Image (cartoon, rainbow, N blue to C red; front, side, top):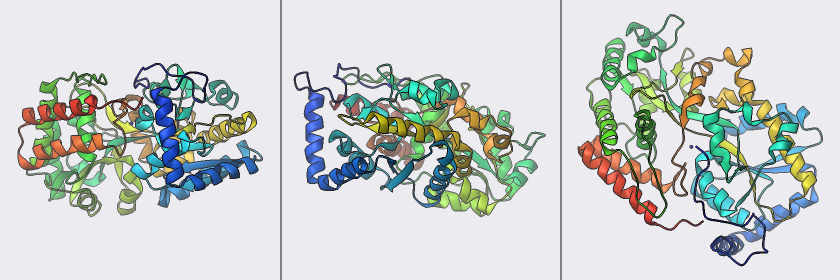
Length: 455
């Protein structure tokens, strides 16, 4: 979480008020009014603080806990490459509160200098004029170029031939495993990596789960999805893209999808959690516990759980998600840096912001400690990165990532993911037939498409 995509309605350049009021302008004004009612004074104060301290780059992000501490470390390491600049972080609550506040602040031109945004949410921001584009020439001056990023990630940064996001990382949905039971099950290569060929079809994937169950003496593959708003969608969409299909989502129209392929994927998911070798009705915390306490040999999870799993098993193994349906595709999203809209940005301060972001990207080896794949590939090509275990084992996932469909209503933490996961859970938990589940998903997608885009 393809080019940026999104609505292609004609639109004035952000901050250009010479044209007659448009729907976008009306929306921006409405959002700005909402910002004034819901804390506009605080946002205005932030803007004043930025103007008063030209040496400080203000950043909004959603990283708390260990990731927050790691970002502080990353910024400290990057400091020599941004002399005279301080980065002042404001950590906001993840999810709807974060993205609502970012939209309101951007609409009023009172946002921070730079903000972290999931790439999958970009289609709901750039087309609305809530972001300013990055100056790629200026980024190149500081050593960051398009060629330094995987095509699968960089192509999602674009909207109307401009770059609206600079990727910090890729965080894919992968597999973790305990090496000892995987070895007993005959699922490791000579160098200790996971033999992905053993998972290269639905039947082989299920059989590998049974072998892992025999090796652990308990269970094979854990997947936590019960009552979760995103897990089923993450697994489904990555597998659906492996069939060579995607959704064509014309806003205001109806979706084009291969419902037979959708049903095939849902059938596999149902068998995966219904196989006697694998635990069935797991919610997210229960799946983590099942894996960390050694009850299961493998777990399907996001790489962001690396720290939790490695604390339980220092020899932890990991791999890119196997290609089960023929076409390499790994569900993922990407934390990225965006420039909240400023009607009259100070060019010297914008230059300082570009320099700071470039410096942070080049120090990405530190960020890799969290399990995230640094998006700036010169980092992942170093010998130091190659020695990281197990991060170096799944770095190739970045070459095949697929993010949420590039439409305004999709993306991390969206109601769309929740709606899709609800249908999928009916299939996995309640026995809804895969073909009926596929049709129900299509119906819900069409409902979302029928709603007018804010752009």
